Length: 256
Ligand code: PGA
Image (cartoon, rainbow, N blue to C red; front, side, top):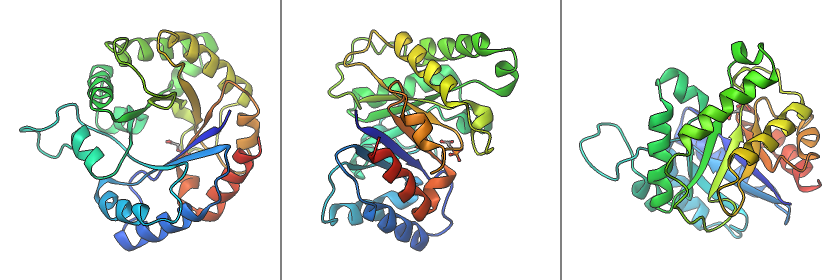
């Protein structure tokens, strides 16, 4: 199975010139048949990056995504961006439910669910993020599973009627919150167990969803995650801002 690798730039870099420079470098990273890459820059850089993307010699197995989306296509929703708008900019994916949005913007599972449904209905592919906080994880793996099961049940409500075109129409990223940006990555065995559990919870969706791991992924640990067949790729934050490091991650992913 190929590895599905997402570069989540978050609120980086600070200028458009840097963003274009970073995109050019990431787009040059060799992608073999085993790797697909989705680059998710801040919205404001997407249009320029999409122009660069269109002019690339090869766009095979490379796509663009937004880091969020709103559930209404248009309307009186100050500051928001709808799924059709995002698609018209050249993005094929949207990250939804990232823990930083849940934490800093108080996004609830109900909001996440509306975003998931609206995006899928508008033909935008979804990268849905779930994962437990440290306080839950300290209670043990069963508590973590229970937390993730509830998130999935709420976030995936009203999706059974949607016909997914490909196995990447809805991708789920398991991102334990305590592992994001902390350097404390989740033991690969646990990540694989959780990925299998997530697949079980989402078994009503066809074709079967892919599950990614996210949280302090780097070139040294990526192979340990991807050797588990349950893990179909990774969501990479900090390390995707360093083209050389992301290149090493992609190289390791391509040789699994
Ligand atoms: P990180 O972020 O790789 O910097 O830990 C992952 C994410 O939040 O998607």
